[in-house]
Amino acid sequence: MASAMADKFHALLREHGRSITRSRTLLFEYLQQSGPVSPRRFMEDNTAVADRASLYRTLILFRDLGVVEDRMIAGKRLVELTDSYDAHHHHLTCEQCGKSIALAMPEIEKALGILSRAQGFEVSGHIIEATGVCADCKARAHA
Image 1 (cartoon, one colour):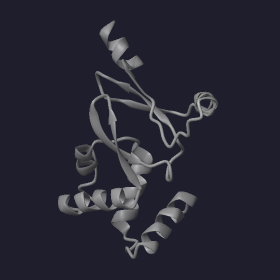
Image 2 (cartoon, helix red, strand yellow):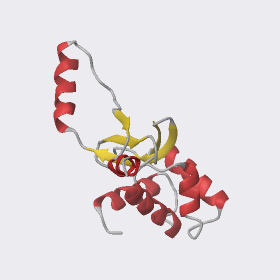
Image 3 (cartoon, helix red, strand yellow):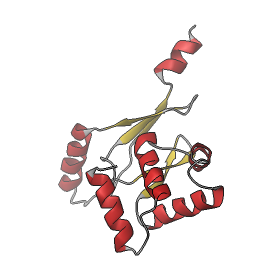
């Protein structure tokens, strides 16, 4: 794992007096690849990396350090990397299968900035989540 985000993650761990362990590095990589994931799924997918208690403690550590944040997507609590470790994005989430597609929306980001400034409002954060039915579930319904 030799990326700028990995280096940033390792620097954060050192800054807070935490060890850079193989399991923490693997779990960070998993989150980079998985996108939003339920805590349960995180546990199930990583049983080979660490025991359940260690996985739970790692999620807490990652939250405390600002590496991950909880999101409510389609009524479900999911965990994903914060914007510090992943490009700012939003989601399209299927209400049937739970599939979540990340979307970068620079046009909307720009429009939000213009609209908020016109109102004298300083935006500190925002979330745009769209729910519906993905193409796969739609196709299965019409098959």
